[in-house]
Length: 411
Image (cartoon, rainbow, N blue to C red; front, side, top):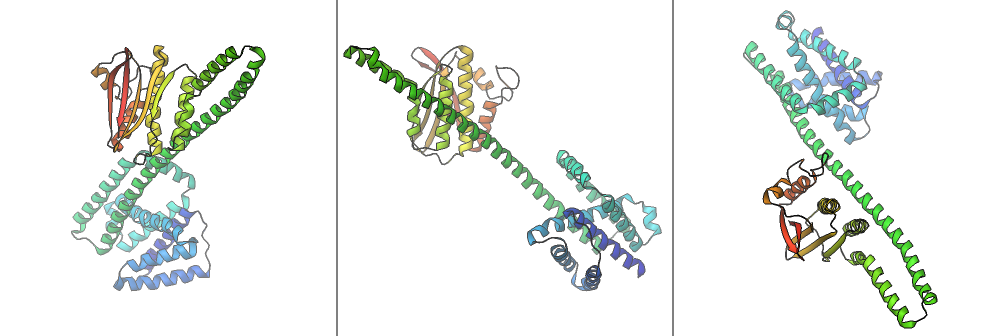
């Protein structure tokens, strides 16, 4: 009777230590603690007829009332306790030799296990959790497989020894399976959340760069605009002949229109993020002497996430610009067209003739003609296109006696 009581007390203390360690709170022992334990002992007696779920209800309520302030905060320490305590008990039982299990009865063994768990929680420091989480994140698959294997070994050895499965053992076993399933779900959700956050960060960086480039370009254009107005106004003082003045002004107007040919983009009723991105890309390419012929239809794009669309266009556009810089050519074409239910992105640049073998290698991970740390752009494009079940076509096209290498994406 006394040994059984000692086992219950040590298990009770171990559970309380576990949940307080999770939330980072110190334990305060007072008369309320004694009332809590007395109520718990009463539930222990009741659980023999009603089952252990009543004890789980107690611990959930205890966590909410004594440890945390909201029901939402209750879930974390409660679930971790349900995971950690049975797992530690199984691991310690597995580590204890069979000779010790033969010497002591089940209650003494339970007390020894609970005392070891209490010592673990007393010695546990917060920095250990950081180290443990890094190890779990790094070797999560191996750890999960090892825990699963260890669980089956424990079940098999227990069955071989006793030839029967005890009800209490089955309770702990069920909890372990449940918690491992919950851990697997949480791990999958964590991985998805991590990918989502990484995508948000990449999108934020992309948009920030786009708006910074657009603002810089507009400021430069504003400065140029002031200079153009001054030059036009001063022409009448330097050119006396009216016909000559008219001709020079016409030439000047044509040059200004040519320099600002991408301003038509700003009038399109499309995503402002996409328009700003294209405008900044076009003006940046023009500053390197690259001539862009573009055809962009005023259409709404709903089936494709804007960040994915910008990434696809950006990779294809940058590859074309880099190729032109390397070759010394200056002409490229950009098209965004809507044909019925089909949305087409077409980016082409002057290029030497490419064979089918060369074109196929473009999409291999790490393949690049620009050296190391390149060769992932088109591989990334291919990955994004699979997400939307889209296709990409690469072909040589002859225009004005020049060969263009055209990348056409079809959604």
